Length: 381
Image 1 (cartoon, rainbow, N blue to C red):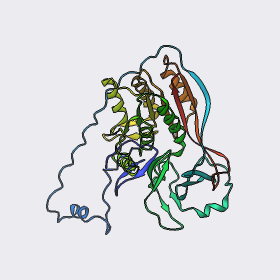
Image 2: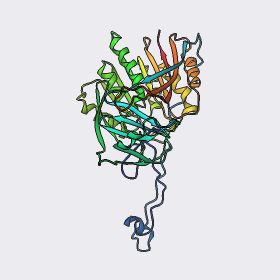
Image 3: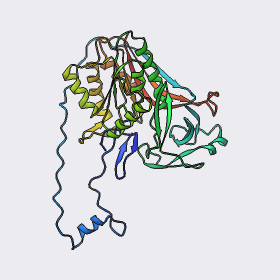
Image 4: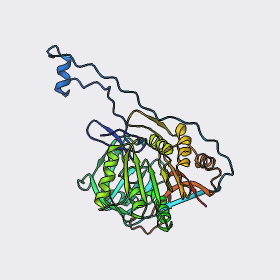
């Protein structure tokens, strides 16, 4: 399996591989010593013992990562775009997804046919409906850190690894992964609805670039609305999952390019080529590693990423959308960065938080809002 960026949203890989979630995997530890004792692999014990027939071949040194050329940030001139702050984009319940209840550091959600309990550090309050939590179909247990691995428990009946779901008319697979995630981040529905409406009403062909595209739900929403889509993710596992979703909905003929590559390298190459896009979605991790050892730190690399994205926006660009998870910063940090990046472009920068509203077991009772992430979005005039 490929190794790519996925930062704080991780998913399980094959045995012995740690992979990450929205198209990114973490590099497995190649320097871990083999286990000793009776449970150790036979080959590992034989290589240590005196009866080994031949010495192990010398280890090859890893090839240095081929870094993309780093250019300086562009000093922008002109007026900063207008601003709208704070903006709270809310996702409410539907027949396929809803936040039923939350509290005591956990959340109870409905994903298709299943009720699922997962850790949620921001749910500081007490549960509103404690009596219905015992009816959950799946519970994630283990490390409560966002990067931590754990396992799923199925208290009512054993469940398969995947199940079908549909959002905004797009079919996809939900999946129980070792890093708590299930293949979709429903708070992103607020961005996807905005994108879908912009594509459908543009009156012209629209090109969409989806960076760190994960399992491809956003890409399928854009393509089904009529856009030509380029989906970039550094994890072969995530790209494979996205293709499975495309096949599930019989959308193989939709114009989507699935590209397994380091996102930063890709956009810098697109800049050199003069390629442009009308809408760019970017959902970078807090920290990650690329397939060739590239290191990503959001606070170090985000300014250049947005700067390059500005350069590959088309002359008739519609919008640039940034979402940030699990960072210790105010949305004002990315808001002001976006406004500086888009100096002279006109339009408006709107920034704030993505939240999900509790809607009860039947989706009819509006409850508390659970914050999930920060966002900043430039929209053309």
